[in-house]
Amino acid sequence: MSMGQTHSVNEIRTAIRELSARAELARKEGRPADADEIEQRIAKYRDELAARP
Image: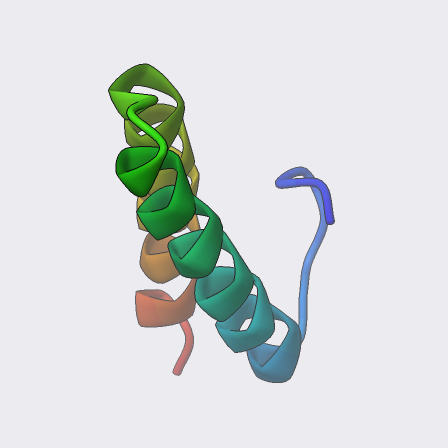
């Protein structure tokens, strides 16, 4: 999913779950920079979700 288009609430929640798992794995594997980048993407999805009515 790209950030430039509108997503359903379900798609956003799924993306957050999947990205959270990837961030956790990156941290366990000792890749904090990758985990931080993924966390930034998660924050954007959370912002999009919070903007919903």
